[in-house]
Image 1 (tube, rainbow, N blue to C red):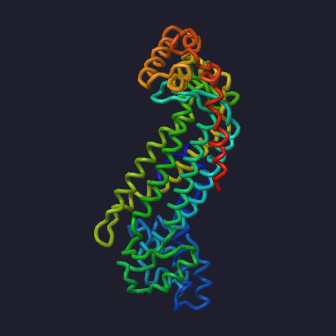
Image 2 (cartoon, rainbow, N blue to C red):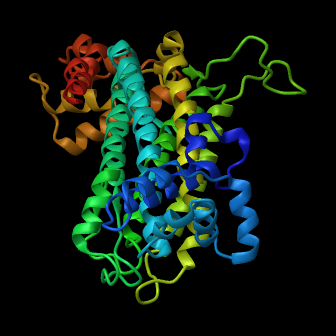
Length: 430
């Protein structure tokens, strides 16, 4: 198992990467290989299927062999008598390791995809709920134009959906095994034998496997995980900004009895969002290590092996944990719609400047050329903000705006007129 601390390990995902689970996957490969051999009798196969192991025995044996698979084969064969000779017959260690790893990744992928879908669906539900909830759109951290909170969330939901698709594709292409021998030439087996063994395990065969399954497959899994983490981080970053005291449009759920600070009782901090941000950095590091594992010497070396024992379990365990955190935020977010409306007024209407600009250009009474219209709208908008005077009042008193229908120019519902269509695109998600 990897090195993720217990704090970040949820039981279902963690159980896939225990030493017990790893060796059970090895056992399944060894048994499937024996079942497709010509040599073993039915009695021997029955004994092989019933063969057991303990992690403790395998680790004790490894102290002698200094080779984990060889130690496991010794333990699994022990007590089988003549039937034991068929265990690992014609196989090389990587036949077992890589094929078993594919089984573990398949199980991990199912859990991660399930979590990614739950997070996506929670965001989509909140987007529909807040389809018309007006709020300030920000670019460069500065008020831009009004948008709706539903539109914002729909964007995150679609990104989450893309990450579902990436995870599905990445884990599907990694569901391959190899029973091809020491350098992938089937010197002790055959392609047909490999196909039959892998069919028993629900895997497909790697086209050319040298001694190992090529590591670009595992790198793709880690890259998909890294991207999924980046998506969670983007959502978390938005959440953190919106929870700042000066903004306070959205807050993380705060449980009864929870303490935000050991010193300041008033504190309610975005700790879940911050945790997501930090863990996303770890996933990116694992993604880089996965790419560096691709280039092995000749038919293989083991420079990838030590890294994989850490990064594959840890990356899947971490993303699973992060899905749990993100789902908590998506489902339990506290939305302050009144505060969103208050913040829309902070610039005294300056965020209507584009509407004013276009109205001045298209003024039926006295249209202005674009640069003059821009300078007029810019001057009035900046004066509104600087002097805390509503832009509408300044425009009403300015002769350059004579003839404009200011009710239309300053109609905030204009910004939400396509919200239903935009959020409705979520219905495309299957």
